[in-house]
Length: 344
Ligand SMILES: Cc1cc2nc3c(=O)[nH]c(=O)nc-3n(C[C@H](O)[C@H](O)[C@H](O)COP(=O)(O)OP(=O)(O)OC[C@H]3O[C@@H](n4cnc5c(N)ncnc54)[C@H](O)[C@@H]3O)c2cc1C
Image (tube, rainbow, N blue to C red; front, side, top):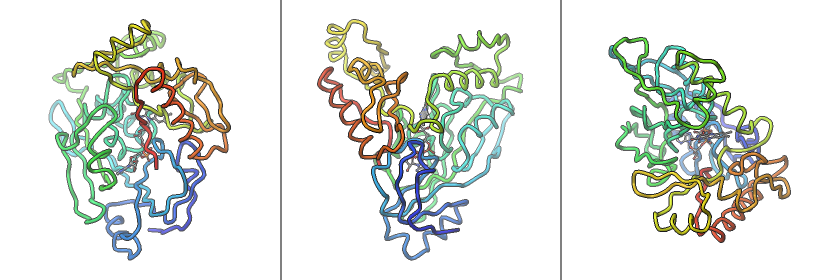
């Protein structure tokens, strides 16, 4: 276990922002984290658990200890005739886990193909795409309380999963290092396992048709989703970004009625709790931000929801730019946008 001082985080955040960590340690096992906790300086410092850095905005140097999660391993923890519990170390690359499951014909994660980041962060914001979220297959997670070193398991009911949300973004924010996550998946190889492919969202069905897929398979759905994502989203290796900067807001029925009276073409998605979800990207685009460049930052030319670093931006600059977007959406529509990205 190496303790690095003044470590550059540029290669560890997909915005590609220049920032340093006062201390930086990569942890490859829960035991290594225990050892780190015994290091005299550790407990006194402010801490930050880092995964793939694809959902953070570093607004400056981190004056504390960055623990980079690198706990590996993917195993079948248990199985029945129709189901399998797959446990993955928090440091595994998310998409590698998806492919591992697809190759073995374990269904449930394929719609989440190509989401950047590591397994350990998947429950934090209940990652979701194309009609599927972490919570749909989540079984449990193992975590270590950072201050006490206590090992804790969280079941689905403990995580308060919501849209891009969980208890780890609120009451338990920053308190645990998630070391492993388990998923309950369907064994498609079993004749008794009924399986419903989720292909109704976005362009999934259309893409499968273009691919001339006759018999649906996990591989085909995963590939279709990779194609759509590659065509739609800017690759952080080419242009710094953290995916959607804001969440899609849910508004009340009354707010929606006022909005649609003024803007009849407002795209909207009624929610089961009676609220109405409105795409943040649409609101931002209406305010004229799509493709706008300001200094080293801006809104992506094709995706208004994606704030990008055109090179040389600072975290502060991006934060201020995002605040300007929020203000204009608030002033024009009376809707408050919340960031999906974790501001550090
Ligand atoms: C191009 C692009 C597309 C994206 N598309 C999607 C999408 O479709 N759907 C979606 O939901 N998200 C999407 N995202 C956001 C991002 O990929 C996810 O939020 C992902 O889960 C973040 O993983 P990470 O390992 O990079 O987390 P990080 O950015 O490193 O960390 C995110 C937060 O989780 C905490 N954290 C990370 N690991 C642990 C751990 N082991 N224990 C405790 N806390 C931890 C961090 O402290 C931080 O607060 C996208 C991002 C990009 C760049």
